[in-house]
Length: 389
Ligand code: GLA
Picture 1: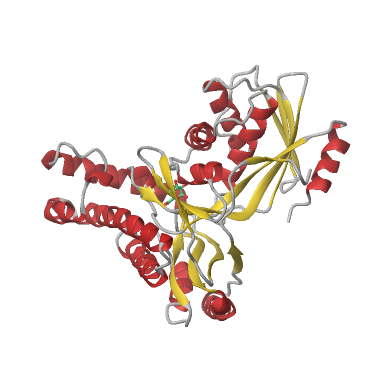
Picture 2: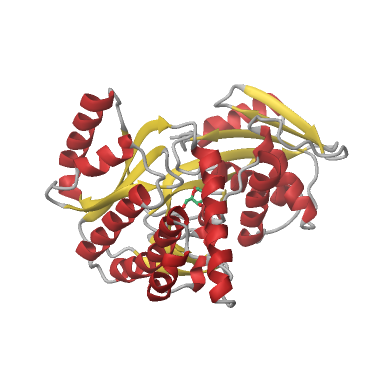
């Protein structure tokens, strides 16, 4: 846990100024994977792990940022042209600052100090948490009161697209910006609106397992999946001119059109079309406490990501398989972009030790991996930290 008093004290020591504090959460997606960039539906929650930014204005136009995790200070000057793709964590910060400027926010020079308990590279959206906490901090320090969270989310996404070079969808930044406590958000990634879904979990909870593997493929394969979906849409639109994205195709329509698609594109699109329907059904199941149904949909999502979308990996499959017969487990699946990272499991609280043991044993025996576990609540999105400061 980040100690806010200590963070504040470090900042004062470094800059002889008293900072304001801001934070934004990481996320876990319950279901709705690789649907966001297809204008579809996702169902994430923000998790208990957050990134914190201490910040205060400067009298010049520099943004000077110290990361405690990297033990490194980096800076850029707002009066100079932006420099995309330096290949360091500054890309997330500068990309967000420039995107906010482009959206008309009065961003001024600032000193920032960053600390996070979102593990980097685990697929829990450490980068969105960084973009949102920095974005909120810079907008607030520049004089904007209560900056609009959706605009901050879009600025974070354009930092990814333009400065980092990842063609991500909007899910991660959106949930980090707009998350609500004790609720998942059913996000419509076309209209950018959401429905809060209260978590009717009874005695069950959400368990995250970080397999701590990261396969190199992930960003090139991610962009490739996007292109394959676009290729599918082009083909489908020849028959159905109203189709703009896979979101516009029902399961029945898709199955009628599927034979016209090349086999690989067909499988990619089948995942997305079905995943949208699973996500809508899962939101209803979650809201009404039908956990068996929720679990069934989560398991079907994993199978589809593994077999049709091919973004899982042996370690994630093993972690999911390890709890498939565990009493008290409703469902388990990979979460996030894939090729490593985490699984998410919905299970009875009393089943947590059993599930942890089963996954740990299987991953240790087969891959010599020591996974990390987090039981999480659904938390609120980006905010300024007042009371504990
Ligand atoms: C990553 C991206 C998201 C989303 C997921 C897959 O987390 O950042 O936009 O596409 O992968 O669902």
